[in-house]
Length: 141
Image (cartoon, rainbow, N blue to C red; front, side, top):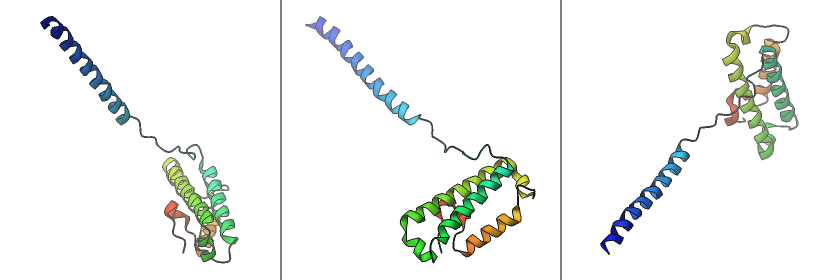
């Protein structure tokens, strides 16, 4: 009987250790998973492309806004509000990416980087109650 206990006890301890080791590995694997960063879809744009993309976002937001008589009507449409929020989020990501890559070049007017026209369009959109610079947490007023 003593021989059986001497054989079973180490086996029992071995199985216990192996079983515990597998659990530890599972929790380690779960906790070490890399945090996924959002894909920067604007990373490869040059200054001209940044300006062009910004103008397109502004124009699209204006088209959506002009489909309604007032900002209150737009606010009532949940789907449309989400579209504007998405555009505003894309706009802030675009600005962030472009300024990160091109810095001061973004403030140099050129044939393809018409800063006056962009300011005019942004001001008109703000007058219509949409300020894209607020990003996805935009408050429509």
